[in-house]
Image (tube, rainbow, N blue to C red; front, side, top):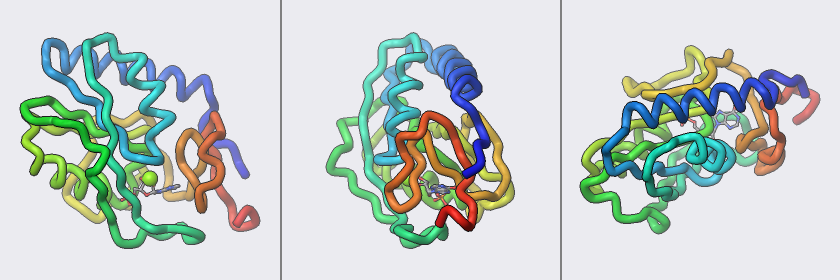
Length: 172
Ligand code: IMP
Ligand code: MG
């Protein structure tokens, strides 16, 4: 595995993202909604850097990758979703790759009556988008490689790594 982004760089970028969000959402009824499972590390670090009154919630999405590094069919589960009627929602995920997860989730969330929906990701994979939709906030642009750590998994392993690493052929 090759280390791509280290802990101090992640900490700095997440801190400035939190400051930016606090400025942009000041005075608004913010709900930060994390996508289970990949966003949980970013979600917990980010909300503690947003100096505002806010609520935290979760929504589940999976694209059934398993032992592949290619996306599959998007499944959304709203059982964990809190009441977001009239609230400004910031949807947080680990990575924007094809964009199908964030764009599908945004459509689903809009059906639950929020005042607005914005999106934030740690990583934006350059040149992989298959949709018109783009995230409003991101910390790092990365090339088209398969990464793990800081919430991102391969077959449910490696989410706990405090840094972002590139998974190479020999790691699979
Ligand atoms: P998208 O729908 O193609 O944008 O992919 C989003 C989801 O795919 C993310 O929430 C991740 O769970 C997963 N994913 C995409 N790229 C990677 C990667 O490089 N490593 C691990 N998971 C990834
Ligand atoms: Mg995920």
